[in-house]
Image (cartoon, rainbow, N blue to C red; front, side):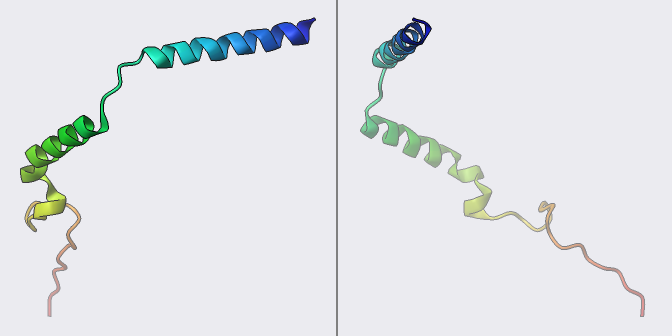
Amino acid sequence: MSASSSVAAGKQKVVQQLWLEARLNRVKVSRAVADLKQFCLQKAQRDPLQDGVSSSTNPFRPQKVCSFL
């Protein structure tokens, strides 16, 4: 009897999860893409992958070695 009650409880959890997912508000893909495009265009001015990083502010630039001859 314990096995059948655990199966029933598992089924009940699955049904509850499906009901929760069915109630979610969905966004159309076209709307999501438009929002993502707008976000990327707004942030493009400060994107170092598009503009590059100036050598004076780049923390990963190779360090200059000072040598005396």
